[in-house]
Image (cartoon, rainbow, N blue to C red; front, side, top):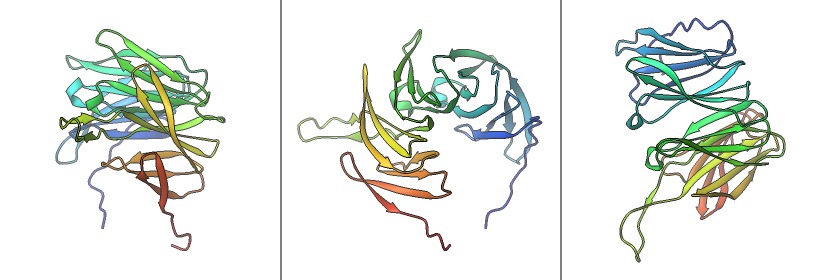
Length: 250
């Protein structure tokens, strides 16, 4: 049985669209239609304390996502105002570190890559495109996938980094980056990203809203506007099969 351990009074003045804990479970980030991102400290006893109120968006903020702590205390947010913002805590104070404003419509989803791939985030937009933005040491470098979906893109997520060995080269290698996106065109698409280029690996026919990968990166969970959650498994490279479909009678 699930029990309520604590309740956070966010103080947002409108609908809260997302709430995300950091890697250690000590910080909570929330975002709302009131254009604000808020940060709370979460104590081990369940108590919460407001830490920061981040202003910089000019529309409803749809999603927030924490970067891995190896890169510092970094948070990303995306909004109806067509912007994705990277926030960073420096000496106890939060500041805007980077603003990506190259989308032509609402930015609906944002996700950091696994830390093995360094500091990279992806975001997607109602303008049908997906952007991948990488920190190159002194500057952020964006790559855009135009027309990733025909009717707008709602969700984007990274596959966990997989380490593999081969008989030819026994040293461990990290597989190329893989991203999944879903849109209003009833498609879920899986993309492989290599330096300088990105290509589509597979597409799944489904109404899509939110997606997530298993830790082994071979099972994909997808939820849609049809109020269903489906599981897909990669049986062969780039060959995906639906392995679970909800029972409408339950």
